[in-house]
Amino acid sequence: MSEYIGAPSELAQRAQAKLDTLPLNMLQEAGISRDRSTYFLNIAYPSMQAMPEANPSQVLRETETRNGQCVALYMHVPFCTAECYYCHYYKLFRKPPEVVDSYLDTVRQELQMQSQRFGGLEAASVYVGGGTPSYMSAGQIDRFFQSIHENVSVQGDAEISFEMHPESVTDDRLAVLQAHGVNRINIGIESFSDELLRSENRRHTAEEARAAYNRAVSAGFRNVNLDLIYGLKGQTVPMWEESLQAVSDLQPASATMYYLRLKRGTPEYQLWKRHPETFPTDDELLLMHAMNFEHMEGDQGYVQNPVDWFIRDPKYFHTYQDHNWRRSDETQLLGIGPSAYSYVGGWQYYNKNDTDQWQQEVSAGNLPIWKGECLTGDEPMRRTVMLGMKMGMDRSSFAQTYRTDVIEAFPETWDRLHQLGLVDISSDAVDLTYTGKLFADEVGQQFYSDQMKGRMEAIDPELVSTTWPQFNQ
Ligand SMILES: C[S@@+](CC[C@H](N)C(=O)[O-])C[C@H]1O[C@@H](n2cnc3c(N)ncnc32)[C@H](O)[C@@H]1O
Ligand code: SF4
Image (cartoon, rainbow, N blue to C red; front, side, top):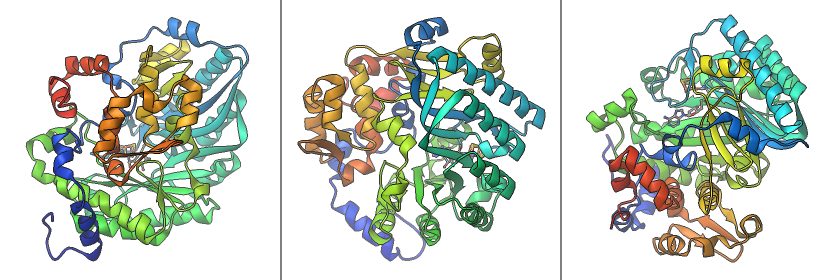
């Protein structure tokens, strides 16, 4: 049992008892253990760090269509009022309204350019993320959605999500969002401990976070997701339990429970490397994770799907994430804005992660692309499994896309994962087991090809020896 002041709570004991039944030592020997700094391997395949710079004219030539394109649309809004110390996203701080206005001009141009590129655009889902989309004023949000509606035909039943920081969940913004058909609000809460909120520079209290949630619900939003993070520096197991309890007291439609991802090279990562004792230990992190299942699923009746998301009712299932991960080979993902990620016509690429450069390229009429590539051979299948396993794979849709069964495509990897108790394989699906859910990122990482591992090795040899210990045997 991990160390903390006072006796472990009933919830912590239950979660620990569950963990005690798992073969954690065997998993560790097999290279399956949580590493907070390798999450980036599972966001794109291969990770952005291993992607070459892409040639925008080549991408355009190879992906242009004339008959319209149905996409899951991601819009990146790169503005925040200040920096939260843990955050790993691309963002800019305290920019004046005219900078946001100029960003909005470029968003409109980029959307026009993309609509021309594909001969029209249709969106099956829309996700507005950041940064902090609610940094924009109500008037700016109105302009933002006008640009979308002018250039994209959003399907009538499309999920339209919008991220908000508690400090900017205001009635005027909520009214504009509603007028534009936004039907899912995502509020960053992160913790219900005022001490942690202060130490991470969140700029709101737990009480203000609750008020923001209640304001969104009172405005008529039923589908409100709350983001929380466990593993923050200074966080104890009882502090996490307090946050878990506070979330379930609100009974939101869904809640995301992220473990703290540490981005290499950031001050937070350096602190963890130099002073790991500042953060919860690996055992505590795992215990907090197991507590999420005990509390949210066991006590509260939520269901985790996909990994990290707990939903109260299937009607609140996160469609955009389904398009992005499980249906990653059927759905085209189109990213607009600096640093946005796209997967279109077999090409995956990132937009420039610098707002000035992104604006220069768009103004010059160029696709504002930075890194990316078109995967070949069995690599698209590997990408599909790596992302799809966050939700579970449907064997027949995989077979339809790739003309081969997913198990037959990677028999040895599945065999090993099955022997380690990480996956359930049935005739129609492959799913993570309870243990697999605890190590979902690590399961996905097993599908990296030797070629891609070789690329990662060139970037960071230590990464390969810790993530794929069996790689060089
Ligand atoms: C773009 S932010 C959400 C909206 C808004 N900017 C806010 O902070 O309230 C998206 C979410 O990513 C999560 N996040 C950011 N950095 C993270 C990290 N290093 N590890 C895990 N989750 C992180 C946080 O839960 C955050 O709410
Ligand atoms: S967590 Fe949200 S508000 Fe904080 S820096 Fe990241 S994007 Fe900005």
